Image (cartoon, rainbow, N blue to C red; front, side, top):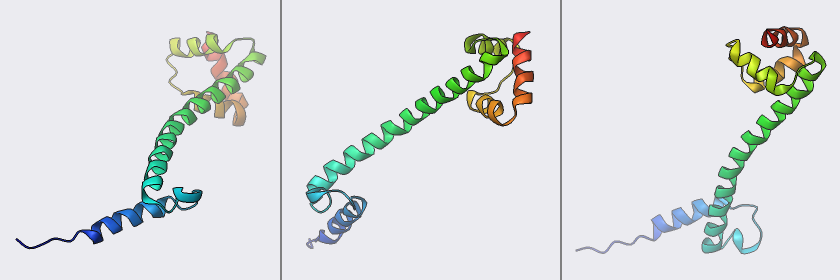
Length: 115
């Protein structure tokens, strides 16, 4: 059986990983083992942070809606409950955008939720 040398594949894989660790500090950018550990950790944090970003944005939208419905004499929870009862299927992001850019339309939606 002929001998197979696999240095090229390994080198290609290592170079690909080291290219992704550009900008890391010290051995974390140029020693394969350290770079691999750091990159796996970075990917884990990136995955987690994408979820946390969604959570943060939702809380921002809720804060905006709370501030927007207070002058109309209602609370956020009553507003959302009223929308569910009225079968208005707008998400919190769109409602917050409406409250900022289309205050007249938003006030009509608030009136719908009150009934």
